[in-house]
Image (cartoon, rainbow, N blue to C red):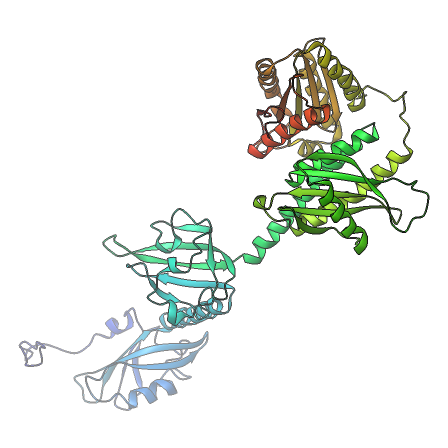
Length: 570
């Protein structure tokens, strides 16, 4: 054993000459060169094709020869050389070993082209990915085992710089008043995607992020942190909220206008407009004023008189002050005023360029302030109410109007309310209770959208049969319009009405086959109101209670029933 760790053994009788066939069969490029650097033996891989031999195949290529000139000292490490072969640039590590004959050397070449190409590709890919992450709209981060930030991209997060974030806890950025995920993505033990979190920006604004993250575990399986990205979706959420509010305004507008437009009696039309507006806007009360002069007479300042009042409203003095303010300012858009501890939204009802009335909606400030969406909705609705007021001024009751819905054969809205008014008056004489059941098809619009109106008509007829076959001959059954139905139950108390509602819901289970989509099944929302003639309740309040109960079911998830509180209990 030599002092340098090598082992020579007894070489006196050992033939150290190389076998030429061994060189030719070597798995890597190999050759033997003489003292003049001429190639004596070379295998097929040590070739001109690979850029290792010069043209003619008897001399080393220029780069290889230059490299060997620098590698004459025995024991030198391998030298790397770049050559150009028939297929393009190649990179080899050259290993040179002296042979027994003076000046003769064995040259071995290890092809590193693929390794270096892969390494360069990885370096380039990593640099590219790093650049893309830094310039993207996402915020990349990593947390350590103690839950603090250990890495944040240069943009920081929520207005906080990376320097200030490193070592801090992610929870310090979260908005405590906003709903947060059950498992924080910054300390998640499992991979999560698109988890919504809310943060407070350093400027005070709220930011919404969608976070995707993966946990980090060491080789022992211990949790060592998490890594992920945050995508700022604040503007998207605001836009979604705007669209949702817009759709909600459209639904409320359609609901309110459909209800009061179908009223045959103009006085009832305005009364129902007041009640449905109260419920649709979440108000405590509504007043509708109309002009006292003929609408075809030009006037500079309309004289308004109270025509309809519903719910809890202000005193006459308060309303007079509000109307004076409206008329003095000659505003075309709704305004909001605070008076008597209530917040009031006021709009003029303008028809043909003339103010023909006014609408006042009252709300307790504890129920929330009026929004821009409320103002926009009232602006649209006031035009419809103006048309109703105009109609009221010139309307003549058409006695020969049809009382039957042509599609279902049930009473239509006018026929139902005419008969209901007659029976309502009779209740006052007989002192007997009655029930009003309001029914509305849930997800019906999707049936028309996906399957066509013919399928929608078939659905409405099927529901009409359900109601007709599960009521008594003394009851009234009507299609009020669209997908809205109503049932008057004579001499019925709350128990009888609930029983009927349960029967309707059970029978309506067959409606599932008419649904537009499996995730939006066709169901019934039912509102029930019981009238006790011992109370001073009017018919419009009676109808409003049933309507409000149905709205409550829709807000609670649909497909069920609700009983309105007794008259005067609100």
